[in-house]
Structure formats: structure tokens, C-alpha cells
Length: 68
View 1: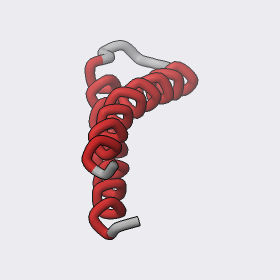
View 2: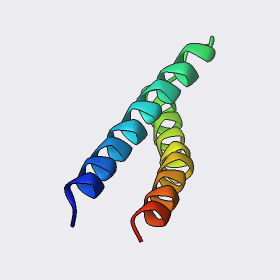
View 3: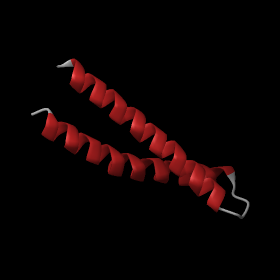
View 4: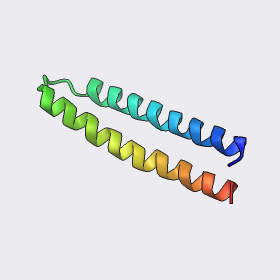
């Protein structure tokens, strides 16, 4: 595996984690009402899953095309 591919995969993982964190923060801020700890955890879990699938899928697809 080339060093460029390792760097690309590392940056892609970092981007996915950062996007997941920011989306979780936005969801928590947009909820004005008081949420229980369980509800907040469910929102975080679903948000992390959706962002991981969307952003991670795009990054995986682009990485696969570039490094055939």
C-alpha cells in the first residue's frame, strides 16, 4: 500500500469523525426542549450512523477510483 493511499484513508477517517461530531453538535443545539439522556444518545447514534454512511461512502468511493 502506497504512502499516498495511507494518507488519504487517514484523512478520510478524520473527516468522517469531524463531520459526525459537528452534525451531532448541530442536532443537540437545534433541539430546544429538554431531552433525556437516552433520547440524546439515540439522536447521537443515528446522526453518527447517517453521517458515517454518507461521508464515509463518498470517501471510500473516491479513494477506490483514484487508487485502482
